[in-house]
Length: 282
Figure 1 (cartoon, rainbow, N blue to C red):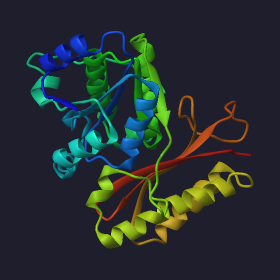
Figure 2: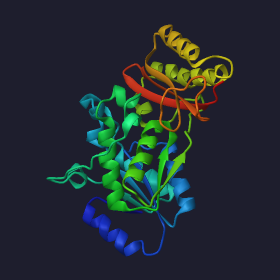
Figure 3: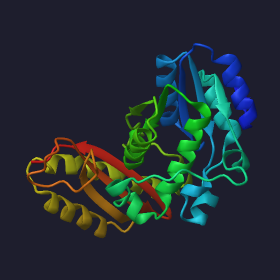
Figure 4: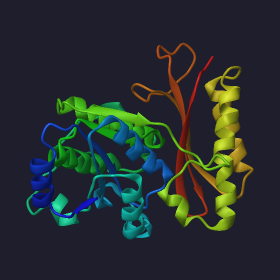
């Protein structure tokens, strides 16, 4: 497995090694778990060459403490990627991604960035767009792989690809979960034991939401979710929304959209977690 740390090395590697081979790209912020590795495995099945990147992007953190706490396990990550069969890993510094006088592209994501993560983390998606567009410009893959746990982010990136008219296929990969249902996340490493136990209740509530969706209104479902968190001293709800999967606007009776997703963000102790589940509404 080739480890690449500079843009010039990356350009040389792609020019000399790619040739007519297809390239799959898996961008990450490291602290890899089986969910990340499942993206790599899918990419390996669908491409001749697979490149993964590890870069903790500072511009998408609107909270400096959150950035400082983000897990850094680069040696473990490299070992896991090599074992998974990844062909190359790009591990750039901040100055390689954002060189002096670098100006990020501007995008208009419209309503997509006005809700949920966009509303609660101002500037977050500007940072996501800056790093993703930069990586796409450098790597120029045929396919790029993203997990559905960050569903709003995936929708934003689809819009970015359309706005840039990229000849790129985004491959959405299902959420991988722990045996108790907790969505796999790098942030899970930061959970205290008691908070880890409480965090498993997030998914169990989403499963109940899926059951309720066939017989209750969205307003009633939201009321139930809010009440369960008010009654739970170990979890603090930031938001719960049921939205359509196209423009992420609130779902409700008479919606023109057929697919909907229940999205949640909450705190287990001091650690912010997100999750989602596709549902059918009545």
